[in-house]
Length: 291
Image (cartoon, rainbow, N blue to C red):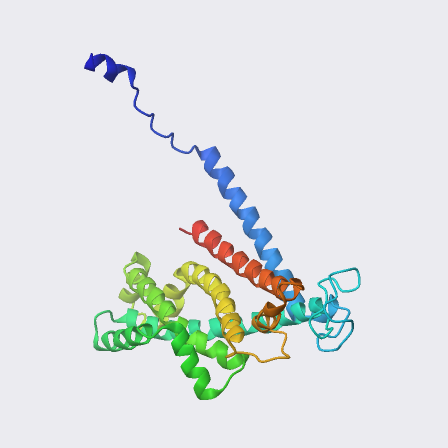
């Protein structure tokens, strides 16, 4: 009886490995999606640099009645004092994008210096010293570190971006250090050392080009996270201040009117979410293509 049951219950068949045709189709789909996301990002950058190309109203002037619902004249409606919300969201994109860019540049430069110096001589005195400093900064919550910097130097988009960049530099340092150590074992890097190339020539000519793909993916991911962090600081009152059109300020100013004017807070929040998701998806595709 047991033998009969054993023969009637068939084991699940193993999944068939993907064929080259299926793999090629998936890769082409990822490439098309990546190109689409890059095109959308380019449009966002263009709009951020030239916001007047797509707006008809001044973001700080009173052009309508308060709490006008979205219509043909005011595409996103107006806020609590009659300012055009579409113009404020578009001009806020410039503040959010360039603040996040500054944060990522600070994090990337500081992390690259620390990571390269540590990775050149792993286990050496400098590596141990920089490792202790990095771990000490990582032990401080990022929000607390940002608040400490803002409290010392004052509020504003630039200060908030630098504070976020300092907090994110530790992640870049650990990533770049690992990539430098791994790249140092490659055959052509060892051959360059054997031919008499100095440490900095090896780093600039051989190591850094080989780690650009993981660093680029990590940068795209943290660009979106930096936008979210800067918006959060402004929402809490530690970043930009009203009447700035920064997205965190718009969300904070409109949250009290959600019951009867949902668009004042929901549209800037949706814009911030969409841009962060776009950058996160782009980072994933960049990582997948070079895994």
